[in-house]
Image (cartoon, rainbow, N blue to C red; front, side, top):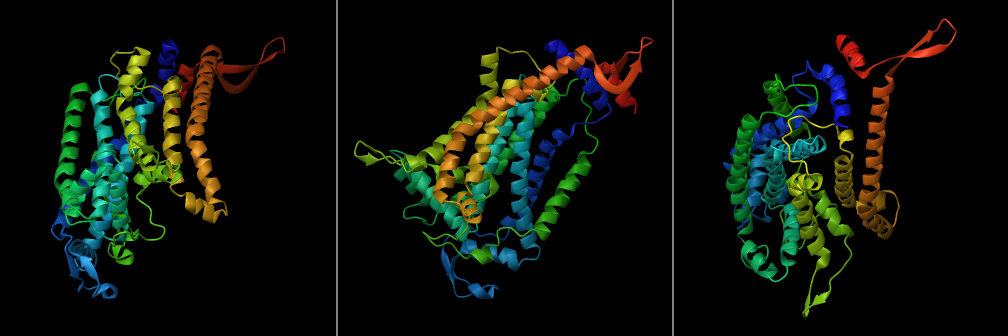
Length: 449
């Protein structure tokens, strides 16, 4: 198999040798540039935002809410949105940058996984990007709470329920988090400090460590190529800034003046979390109502499993996968050349199964919308997802593995018999045969053209 990969690498290499970088390498750069935009816009917003949950009577410029009791946090967010010059643009660019950052990190992790870029010596680099994924989600959740609007109030209720579901210490942790009665008066100041001071510092420090590791180990590359530093990094930075500014200008997001201030125990109809939290919402929606009595106390498995056990297991396996694969395969060598996904059939199948599991939970977050728009029973839709999240990854794993093996067999046939050219030759005896070329010759011809 290694010999086959080396010979087929020549085909890929002749077509990529003149490229500065493969397009899939750009996801990491987009994530870094989105983080830069997040830091800049977040610094602007801190000058106007007041993380105070004290209730005041709103007397600002938005007429429909005048005279309504709101928190200072909500009032300051409304002020920066509607009264500060450029404030709404900054808020929306900040929100869009969060979504793009987490999306770019997800795509970058997929690229690292399917090409085997997490193998030695780049295991720490993999952990850094998994950490960025988790920190991005935490930053998004804590930032979404800060406006203290109806949508963030619903998120706080979910956080309260998840915290209280933790056995033995749930009630104690809830008291520490909310400072007594929910929602209390300290959760938003606490999340503000996490969101503004702690999380960004950790994320930037991780990127500094990543840069050091990149200089130490060098960049990975596809077969048959050597890495050339990208020439369009500055252009990509300006393109990322331009796209985020365009989205912040024309695509409205989180209009808190339409949601109104948070009210304990109340949430808006059709309220959904940002896309990166959809898997958690979906897991909670399809989890059966299991609440056994243990030692005389109810154990809320219907919340504990989907909200803590499933995400915890998912991210633990994700972070530990390089070590797991190394132990199972016995491969402890240094790798600087990336794999084609088809050449690592089991790994590709595992990745496809994981994506299926995550995607089904993500879609399950819209089970009520699916039932409504397609005139289906909500009970039937929920049970479909309960079965699909168990059976779907297994089916996709086997299907993907077989596809990869079939593609490997196709490569072997091409290597043995050559590549069809579509040209027929007639022998002196009158026999017709199709002319074929070797994969290397075909790559050379394509490169010349």
